[in-house]
Length: 313
Image (cartoon, rainbow, N blue to C red; front, side, top):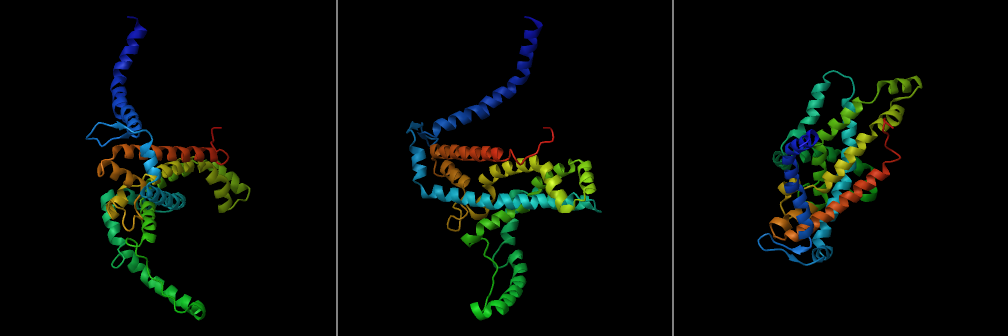
């Protein structure tokens, strides 16, 4: 055996554990899920080939469309708001003021709270009658009601604003979950902060020499230089928000109460797989979500060509 061949087999011996693990835990499950998505399969019995029946059943399933609609509404609310809040916080935390490390720690801490503990904590905060948030909102809304009644009372009559019932009103459950997702966005904020600290100082100095103010420097220096980081976080946000599961499952249960308003796509997939034992249907849902995420990711990358600046070229 030549030295080159011996070196090849030695390398293969070292990487073989990873290759075996990749084949067992990635390639086989992915391949099997494609096959099962075309089968009537309940795990306890052998799969029976039924063609596209699972996909056609999903198209006719109202709950499938409800869960998909809930997921898209949540993503369209959480992604822009989370991007704006995390980027704004990162820009504030990038300023040179005293005790900045303390401020950064305070804003990052919520992302370290375990998901179950966070769900229980916010169930108390968002309680409609005794929650801290509504207790704080009541005096503010009372003042606003008095002002609005004074201004619009002759036309609309007495106006009495009340804090929302976050957990039992179907119109407010998704905004409540959006609030939680923004509150725990410390990881995204840290990525933005790291990106801001990589922006070359000489670009700001050149902008200052040209007489640029804060807004001009932000618009023409900070955001263009940060655009690759923004694109990365947006794509990660798309993937994460379309797969929201743990918090609504803990806070609102498997049915997505009230009135299925928090019944998200992955919750319905989980129920089909492990409660109704419709593993073939769940596999079909998984591949539909894969295609949706892939299309949105490619669309984001294509739309970013004119707006993302890479300093290397």
